[in-house]
Length: 282
Length: 314
Image (cartoon, rainbow over the protein chains, first blue to last red):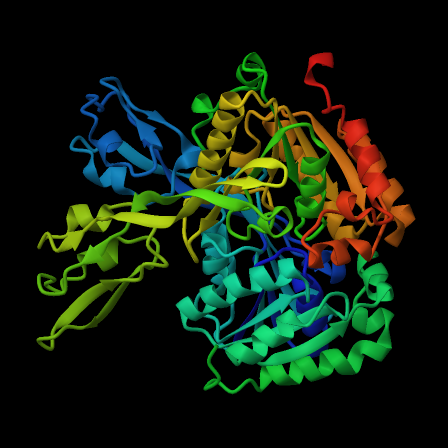
């Protein structure tokens, strides 16, 4: 079972929910940190670090001898990553999506694809939790290829949690696509509600069942609750607005360890997630 | 994707027109970036405001803009297979590197291919190599952008379609429009609310800006993410300033972050206290400097420290 933890708005507590759930589930659970621009799960789940494995994207390399500057590659490239104005083409690797089209359309077979590093994957064994972390290199604009590489590490069997990036655009789709359940973490504020509405629209578009965790419950108003009722979204847990939780998280502590009185709350969430009826649709 | 770097307006170009952009970003999400950006927009003299967090835009919830013009945002293309002409040969399935082609049973019982629009990256490989010429490649509508009047003056904002691509291009468009409005109305300050992370919409938000303000929080995650976002600002050679929001949640961590920020070459420009009044202001659709809650004085001090008030002094 793959459970993705996502949110439209950033900083609502996705990572808090993901790492505490992973700790409670234990027993071989995989946690995939797909927030590859700013991965944070490892800060809460220290463990034995595996070697970093580089992740690459195939980008074009032009054989200057064979190229006759016909411009076919440049005309084809949808991303302007290979450009030729009557001269031999220039490659802008940071714009390349690695589709391979330029090499296919080149009539002189003058383009070959070479791997370009975009980031790395690190596997951490953290007390019963296998944490797979993607980390995009600073300055690399496009994260979906790395996110897909992290997602490919989900084992065929057993429980996998995915910590998704914030937002509602292509990186979130790459992280969440194919999950069995999406847990949307939000907060009861106007920003939280607005971004939850967007996230629900995204999850519905993908056709995945979802439930909501309301973090910092009590800090704002009840419009998020009303929205969930109206839309038939199950509220899986409410985490109170407790400054001690914020302080524990600020130090990289797990809530279930630093504040054991909250363990039952996360245990209940874990039970609801594990036994989420697949017929419940968003 | 961001604009190609050679095409983006360099800081020098911006200075020639007298327009300076302050881009507020955070690395980690939810640190209070939008609340700070909105408050700075209220403090700034005749600003233009641009919301570049296009896939979870929230600034309008504080600045109550009245939309004056709405434009569709089209970017890129998407592959669409004509089921009537598809031979089911699977060539597209073999060539697609994004797993965007699904093979299904066709109407006549044979195989047929369909494109999953959420996975299609619009590269056009399948379109070019389909032996039956069965794949169309229409332009894709990815969202919309708006020019509005907010309490603070002109505001440009956008809404990326759900699950859409090309957020970087939309960000570039929003910034370009904000600069154009500033020039047309003789305004010199553009306040940009940027997206979280360090990916393409962030890069598109900050290339060529006069100054980046990173709003972070005193947590292990805030510390970790700040290092990456400062590296990104350094990569594009943008001067960075840092402020720690909710600093009193963990004072030791605040000191550590401020030291690390200074060591990375950033200016430390202020601290904002943890204040439930921020959410209270949000519920009233106001900024903290308008409700006068406790942290408002911290934000005012931050604005003075940024030195953005009078561009002629620089």
